Amino acid sequence: MIKIIKIIGAFLIVGAVLLPIFHFTVEKINEYEYKEVLAEKEETKDYFALLEIKKIGLKREIYEKDSKENDVNKNILLHQKSILPENGESYIILAAHSGNGHNAYFKDLYQLEIGDEVDFYYDGKDWSYEIVDIEFQDKTGVLYLKEDFPNMIVLITCTKGDSGTQTVYYGVLNETKNL
Image 1 (cartoon, rainbow, N blue to C red):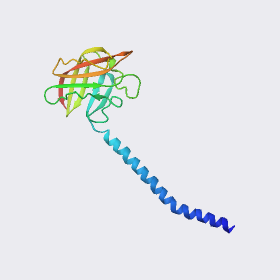
Image 2: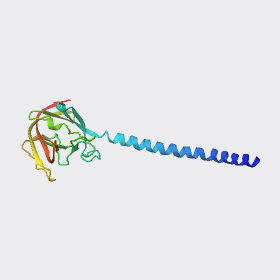
Image 3: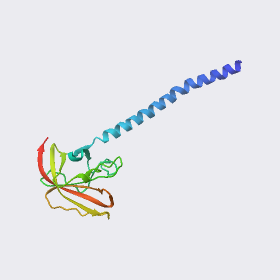
C-alpha cells in the first residue's frame, strides 16, 4: 500500500512540475499563432482602391501590384502593366475568375452592356468609367488589348458558357469626382 502511495505521490510531483511547463508551451504556441493570424489580417488591409459595379452588386478591394493579395486566385488582379489614374492618363487592367468558386468575383460580369458604369475608387476620387466595347478572345495565353483612349479600364474574365474564350470589357473615363 505504501508503495502505491509513493508511486502516486511521484506522479503528482512530476505532474506538478511538468504541467506548468506544458501549459506555458501551449500558451506560447497559441500566442504565436494569434500573432501570425493577426499579422495576416493586418496585411490583407493593404488594399488601396475599390472596384464597384453597381449593376451586378460588386464592390471589392484592389491590392497594390506587389502585394501577395494581388493574386487572381485570391482577389481581383491588378495587372502589372496597369497605369493608375494619377497623371492625366490611366490604363487599369483588372482580371478575375468567373464561374462558381469562392473567388469568382467576375461571375456576373456577363450582365454588363455597352453604356454601363464601372467605378474605381482611388486616391480620394471616384473614377467613373463607361463600358464602350466588349470583345471575345480565344484563350491562347496571350491577350491583345485595345488602347484606343487615354483613360481606360479593362476587365478580363472567362466567357460564361464557353471555356475556350475570355471576355474583355473596355471602359472609358466618363467622370471624376472627389470623395
